[in-house]
Length: 221
Image (spheres, rainbow, N blue to C red):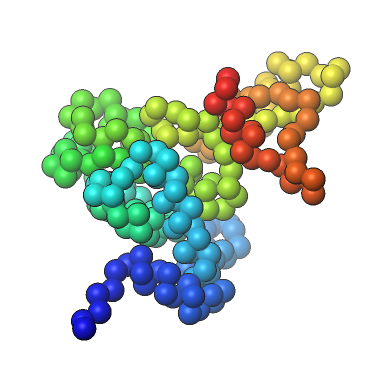
């Protein structure tokens, strides 16, 4: 019988075979080399696939990937294909009209790309098929840290900061200080859009922060 190999099957088979051996290695300017093992890559694809499903993506949907040659692109491609959706790579240097034409032509259901491109394309008017505009920073948080964000109609999620301060502190002053620090240290798309001040962080019996409860708090506000 002829064996048919699919990309998701290859990902899982290599994860089981090679485990912690390096699968993907990269280096950004001014930073130390980073890597994902075969097993970590499979786990990353699964985590992002779950995020895509939660965002409304289903098997057969076309997902446009306007990403540079990067770890995000490799993980996004693996995640999209592993859940049965169709990855549509797009050159991120194309003009907005060119991108809009491709999105309309393939009837893309979702777009993953830079925040400024997502916002501009969402306002273009000729891409009615796209229901979800997702950004790589949210994708990578799912891989690197399991970070949570608040749901957002345009971007899928937006960064949210939970801050614990002393009773004597002024929340408005603390937020202003944090916003100034974030403007200096973080790219625009990584800066928190909301600040929630709490008396204490929800934790497990071993002291780990319960991210699910934080996520529930963002949805309730």
